Length: 140
Image (tube, rainbow, N blue to C red):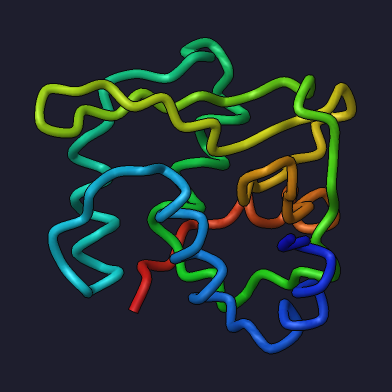
């Protein structure tokens, strides 16, 4: 059978925009274009609510990840982490169906992980403070 571990070396060849697209696809929203900029716009317009309305920290991280180019972000490794972490669930409207997307995870030390699916995450912990305090640069 298929194991993700066999493909982990390929992650080194993926661009930051490839990783962003994988993350967006993980939302399970049916995108209507082949343009990541349009997909981001569609996803942004589909947001109904967040599971942690009170968590400005996670919402700001999510907003910056959606709007910003990931070119400036450096990803050292893909990590498998426990799904019992604090999750930011984003509720999306997809043609009157509600989708629950666990977009981000955070631990008790406020390290942020981008949930790529199947308990595999990209850690942002080394970059989150800089990323959270900077103005998001739009995706190209």
